[in-house]
Structure formats: C-alpha cells, structure tokens
Length: 148
Image (tube, rainbow, N blue to C red):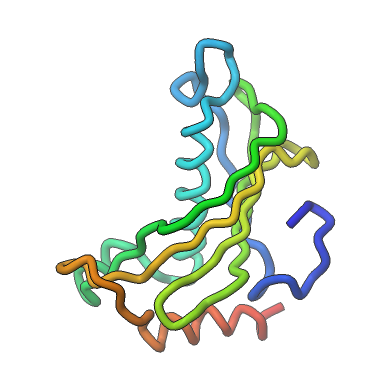
C-alpha cells in the first residue's frame, strides 16, 4: 500500500493517524527504535476503531471481546528521527468471521518508512479463545466501502 496505491485494494479508504517522534521513541543512534514502530501501528489501529465509534475498553466490558495481534510482517525501509511528524495509515484488507488483516504504513511526508501487514484475531476476553466478530462490527467495517 504505497502512497500511490490503487483504490479498491482494501475495505474503505485508508485511515490516517498523525504522531510525532519523541526522545522515548529513539535509540542510541538517534533514530526511531524498531519496536517503537509497532506502538505507532497499534495506536493507529486503535484510533481507526475509535473513528468507527468503537472503544476497545467498551468492547471488553460489554462484549467480552478483545483483539490480539496473531501475525505481523514488517519491512523497515527508512529511518524516522527525533521530532519527525509521521502519518500512520490503516487499511483493512480482509474482515473475516473471527479476524481482520490490515495493511499499514508509517510515512514521513511522502516517504514510506515502514510497511506492515498485521493480522488480528478476535478473542473472548475472559477465555482468550477465538470468537466471531460481532455482526454489528463487521457491518460497520464493510459499510466503509459504501462511504467512499
């Protein structure tokens, strides 16, 4: 999913979350530490859910549901540095019965720094067993295609 990716490769338009690089995100070399990118990606997915009107705490308390990352392919293409303004994109490429697949990028301006494919499983919070996504949530996700 490059900045110039063709439409129709995901469900709905990409969601963009903005953030900035702080000292806590960098390593001794002054560039963003690799694990920090995983935090940036998760925060963007959380804000994507919020943009759908879904809070993860409410999902846990009301639906006994949580999401767990069960797979990730990540490519580090270029470094981010202290004080860089980043945009982190989220594009759902698949929403299945009990899981979702996201394509994500971390960009600085037009430069793609990180590309990731993230697979998240839907789990029953109290047992950590796989469960279906609620029908209302799947419907909300698939309605993004109609909103384009």
